[in-house]
View 1 (cartoon, rainbow, N blue to C red):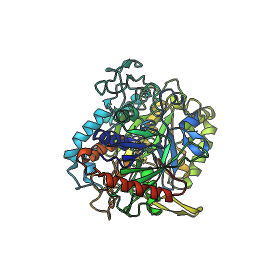
View 2: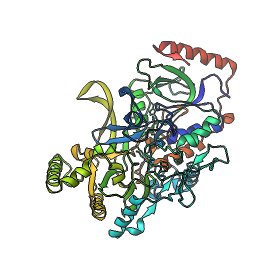
View 3: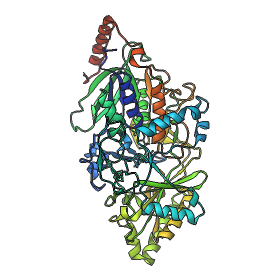
View 4: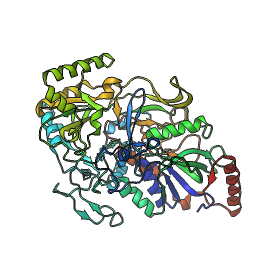
Length: 567
Ligand SMILES: Cc1cc2nc3c(=O)[nH]c(=O)nc-3n(C[C@H](O)[C@H](O)[C@H](O)COP(=O)(O)OP(=O)(O)OC[C@H]3O[C@@H](n4cnc5c(N)ncnc54)[C@H](O)[C@@H]3O)c2cc1C
Ligand code: SF4
């Protein structure tokens, strides 16, 4: 086994793709480190509600060290996770398989016999993430079902597939059992209480977050996880510009204010798994500053969002719509438009600050005037009701949020450049055709739902004020292709232009999935790691002289890097 570098593989990011890589590489005998810029969470440290902003939001420079972040670009508002376990800490635990047609579109079409191959990888991913049909339907799910029946789409209603440990028949949860998933090798688990809190992390230990499966098992096999550690540089080690001698990975602390605590680690291979946004941003920086100049010029192209829109209904009655799992059910209102009933747990009302009355109209500034008119008329006609639907207190348990996704083709691009408002440095910016900020069919459905519940239809403020849709499902940017002229990686996730460098996260998804993506990211990463030979078959065994040579190189290189010390 190779011993001259600090690690065989460094995995950047511990979300769905990174966790699969960490476990499968450790199983194959590699010495693995996982660098994760977010914190490690336990049921005890998770916040009770999202009013505890410092433990919910991740903006460490402002002292907010939670696990959820929002980033605004010209074309979209991206919601994403940031923690040991990546997006799995904040995600709603819905794990759906997309329709087979997705393998026939986008840049991955024809690169592999996907439909034939992916079945077994989806099966492995589902087993590892403990996917089961949701057994707990709450009032929000019942309302979705009624509304679907009212528009003649009742037959499309389904219970979501979720990565949650539930009692077999949806009985009251809260009971602890020895590891139910990995033959006793995993941790004890407690069954779901249907508190609706999945997007705030699970304080009951029922959600199958990655720290309870893939990462848990990877650590048991020797993988080392470095929380609160952000990768800021990756460059080839030695004289081989294509990385065949390995890489130097430089990190810094994300949570210490003054000491950045920079360190450099050496490794033979790197897996970028920092999410679509994180991997694109890191690769842009590294290409721009000359650390990885051969990354394909297509980096940042074909960024997809599942054509998503968040709408909802706020009621003022006694029904507690927060009961159930975060996304308990879904329907198809037409062949390509999919709606899921989503909720936050009782007391987590902070998201109310981002919602307002549903406003139909052209997606331009005139829509703001329509919103103001609607607000004025609503206060005039029903002052008490309007006050109730806009006040933050009670929002979570009185609201049904509808996550609407469309499997239609469409993409934007990300570019790394100076902006007119900040010419001093480059940043990642969106470009291309705007994504529609409202889906008329979904808006009509929201109004149907509000009529049935006696509530008021709502939409996201950002969609109306800035004509910007929000998405929790940003994908692509390092898409698969036959060569570097059309994509960043090949169908085995190998980065064009470099050796032993891989991308395993949402950035490699090369078509619009139309469903929540985490199961697909997991299955794709399982497939990619399946191509890795065990360490004993890898030609990384070094003669003592070669080892000494690399050590010399490493010292020379790290001395050159100002302020950087070797690990
Ligand atoms: C509120 C919410 C609800 C969601 N619900 C669902 C759902 O129900 N079902 C579903 O399928 N999807 C859901 N998603 C989307 C899902 O979370 C993402 O699609 C998924 O996590 C992406 O996986 P990934 O492996 O690409 O990256 P991630 O899981 O995002 O992991 C990437 C990790 O890399 C880390 N990182 C980034 N840059 C660096 C760096 N330079 N150095 C070190 N670490 C770095 C990040 O901190 C992060 O932890 C939801 C998302 C949100 C925000
Ligand atoms: S509904 Fe509550 S108990 Fe069940 S998985 Fe979600 S957070 Fe955990």
